[in-house]
Length: 173
Image (cartoon, rainbow, N blue to C red; front, side, top):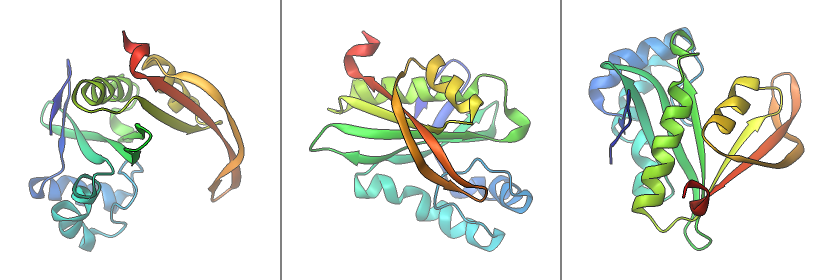
């Protein structure tokens, strides 16, 4: 599974990403998907197995966000519930590449691919209420704000409210 947008290639992570991902882990740049290693020694195993587990299980996919040959971020589908036709999308961009519009471009590209190639009918996006950049990504990608889950996320600084957005297949028509 690969998705091409105007500036990005969204593709599965692979072992050739090891050096770049190892640097990210060492500098603790927070953009890799959940389950990514927190120590350089775990990078090789994650790139060969862990990064692909969602796809193998049918629950989603973790994709590298590549621009001009560099991995600048990640975008994921997860929590897929085929019986209800829903999934959730998440993303992260390396701090050195933020502010260039990569996140909304990746999100919209993966959303379009998902609606064109699967039977899913709804994609959810959740963002901490104080994460203004992520809230902008949701709006730019066309998601509709649906509500707030109070104190639904736990951060090192304590509980945070979470804003829930949704996008239906018909919303892109």
